[in-house]
Length: 250
Length: 308
Image (cartoon, rainbow over all chains, first blue to last red; front, side, top):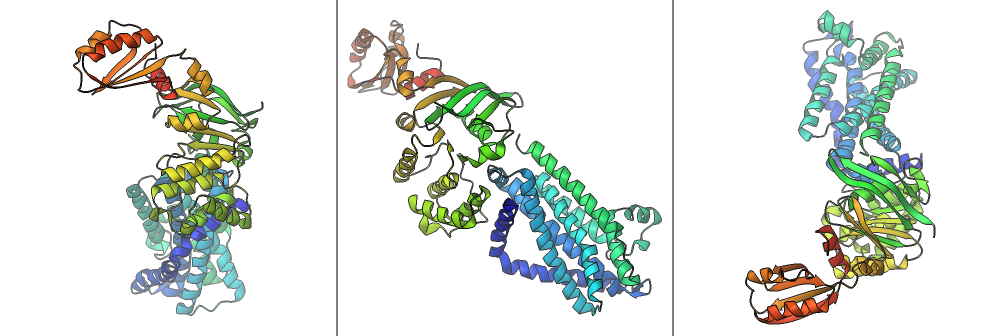
């Protein structure tokens, strides 16, 4: 446990030198998502299920910003340690296992993603004038949190295994574009052909986003998407750990 | 004496390239053991295996009687490792580099800070503690890496060419620190610097193509040459190539080599030297130097076809 805290401390030391730019990014990300996707698509899709599009899209902004921040934090940190600088091998010389290191990195990315999520909830909530009860806000947080966890785990995985920067750029681009366009965050899934719709609907994170929208629309809570996202994250985490354990010390 | 490091039939290969072949040796507790070898002989690989950075393909290795694979946590916490290249974390300043590393080795935050300051004073880099590594010279970075390797007070110290790139003063400081650990800690260092190997080792091993060719105290190693002497003649002018042909008539003149104005050869018999001298005088001699075989000669001989 203490080693995990040291790893988180190490990440914090690195971040605090860029605190201002990080803070600007933290604030700008949800606003950019709101302006680029929310306001522009509002011109095309005024309402979704009798709900004003901007209100309907708010969960998409919350989930996307939390997911993207944790994903990018994890990817950049892991890619730097494992691929660019090779520092991971030096840190692993200490009596710290690959699992501990991976846990530290993931927890750190989840923390950063969570900060982003809270900032997004506040900002978009204020801009949109979302008036919910404390319980509803808390439920929203619980429902969205697994997407932050998934972003952290996925980012760590991609950062660990995609070696070249060019390949990493391509992979990141595909993940980000796919997430923003096909997850039902901004474009309602009903706008896609039936075959694609049914395919997207079985993706845990899409189920999770849909559950958040459902909570806003009908005040009904569905945890299946969130639970499945957590299960998927756990599987990916274990797979990544096992692969690092197997390959990194060759 | 008790063994501190034990290797039994350790082998490592990268694809078809055998780096270490069936390597077995032991290092006693509290002694300084040096491995010398040319580049690519497997010296660094050996240290990386001991420290758990790479896996071996065969064999077993123990540190303080503990298997480095099954009891890695214990072996790594008592081991300090200085890699060949300076690889400080460029996202952290020097102070953070040292404290993070110390804390990963189980030191408390307070103790880590104290140790970082202590080492910065010992190695004279206190003024750059808050600097970023990339702004420092190679020599300073190397000293910091050295401090990082020892910050958790390890019982076993593994050093990969510890003084490469250091100025003479820093070099002396590092050896003074290591000298202070004599008989207290086990030190295994690999180097290409024969002078340091001769001066600071209790035992020396010569590694060649992944095999230990010789292993023993310096005196014992030198003894194996059975009184072989190195002769070095310097000519006034570069002698003609036919000099080497003339030397072929003396089979007991070992490994003669002509490099510009310098002729070097080995022999056990003084008479052979006189024979060569007689020929050499024809070409005008400037200087003569004779010395008993040193580690450098032994190494060159072993790794380049032998001294016989």
